[in-house]
Amino acid sequence: MNSTTSVLNAEQIRALLDVPKLPAELIHEALTAAGVDPNIPDGFKTLAQIGLISAVRAEYNTTKHRAHIARRNGIDKLIKYGPNGHGAENSLASAVSALIAAIELGTGSFDHVLNGMVRLGFLQEGKGSTLLEAYQLATTKPAEKDFHSHEHLPRNGDSSQTDSSPPHQTPLPFIPSPGNRAVDGIRTNEEQTSSHSIPDITLPPSLTFSDDPGSWVLNDLDIRSVDDSRPCSPEGGILQATNIPVHRDWDHPLHSSWGRTLPTISMNPCLSLQGLPSQVEEPLWADLGSSSGSDGIIQVWEEPSINQVSRKRHCDTQLSNRPKKRAATSPRSKYGGFLEREIEKCKAKGHPLPCETFFQRHIEQNLLSISTSSDSLGTILIRIADAGSFICLRNALLNSTLSSGERVSRQTPKKDRYEIMEGLDGNVAFNVFLKRYHLMELFRDCGGLQSRSSTYSISYTTESFSSKSRKRGNPKHNDDAVVTEKMMREVFPQLPTDNPEYERRRRAMARLRTIGRRYQALVDKFGQSVICFLQPCSLTAELDKGVSDNMICDLNEADFKLLIELLEDSQGKALRGLCTKANPVVDDLIFGHQDRIQRLRLQEVQAEDIIAIPKGSPDLELLLCYENLEQDCSVTAQ
Figure 1 (cartoon, helix red, strand yellow):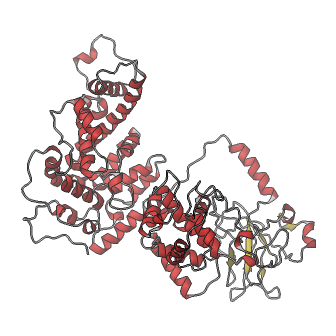
Figure 2: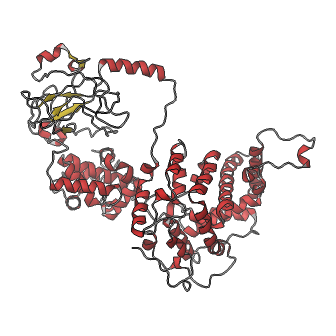
Figure 3: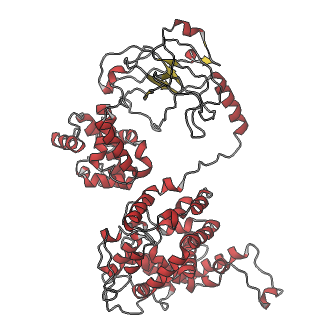
């Protein structure tokens, strides 16, 4: 039982994935952690690399989501864990990816892969719905398979059909040697020995198959009709080309015992060569030898021409010292899942769409212009004061009576305040909010409000022109250092400055100072309760990440200033109005200045009803009303 997966577990996985003939050895490998079985020392790591399905990578390939799938389907109870990885999210996520790879390796059918992902629950929302529609269309209308059966894999140097062989014994496809290439549209003498040679048609290097700049080139193209006796025409016929673009997603090494053909493309009717967009980058070459006999299907390999290799080497030499530009990634692709859910909620409620409110085109363009912090900026911008933050505030209100955390008080000694912060549990919403406000108060107590970093100005008094020498360096940085030193003296009064521990704690205190100052800046701009509308990462109501203290701290000064400007531009008035409404609630929750006699609507509405409300909706503000007021207003998820 230590080296193999039980028959019961294997049957359970087959039933879950709806693949009755899935090999037991693949199931065993997919459910075995590294170091458990000496026969597969890497466990499910290798299969997990293959199982990273690119079509859903951006939306559904997060570790948290795959671990959630494993728990929901009971896969976590079937895994053979190592000594230190029991129930870890990485192990659960790897097992799910490995099972996807096992389906593909065991069946060779993309239909089975999609079906397995549907049954696991991958393709149920967001971008997955589009893939699910494509899957349903494929099952109702037969189409060419994305994967050839293993019987048609070419062996080394042999383009004829091979005998049927098991998936784990099939060799990798033969890659043509450089001698089989064409140079400037003219075949080399090796072509004379090939029975599959066809006439070459060299087209201008301005033709391409893709509208996307930086795609594939149509340089050195071979075209023929499937029936050599009739020309290719718009009414019928099939185009065969040696460089039809093929998307390559295999970023990881393939399983050592797995072989497969490259994708095949069927083109019917004939592709017109007029009006094709222009872009030159890289030719692709195909082996037009005999395949499985299916007309109009070609196999494509990527292989640069001799001239291109020379040009590339020359360009690499010239550009080797230039900094590489980071590819621009649209915020819509980073936050697509959240934005799509918001759009669905807005349509259901008749609320303006995100592109009309907090995520207009110019906001997106500003995020695109930032190369380093756009991820954090965008996350804060779209997650502040959304439905998830209201759920966190609701949880804080409900467990405030159960928490041992002390309310924030102006009279709390600085050293005690730091110890309170250290003792608060970060997995409780109320404690997270307490810690943030305690940190902001500690920053204030140590003179942070008078620093140039907080006021964004330099004040001149009569003492400014005194003859005494001033400290050298940037005045703003000097002020920050003074605040940090004061925080250190208040919190660690007995720690000498020459102690090695002092510098380590000072660096940590500098981060706390930065976080406290930035929370203070947000409060000054939008209101006391704005900190409670930044939902913590560990307490998000959805799978998307929230806003952490580190995310606030790691922004450089220019990006944090831009964040304030973008918040003001996109939702400043609405956010200030919401904070004004929430300030009494937060004042009671955090500072305990007044007692709530009545319960808020927020405490009575279920989390699943709150999450259905779009960001910026008046329904969210109504949640901050008391129960016995405005009885005619109700919040329900439609």
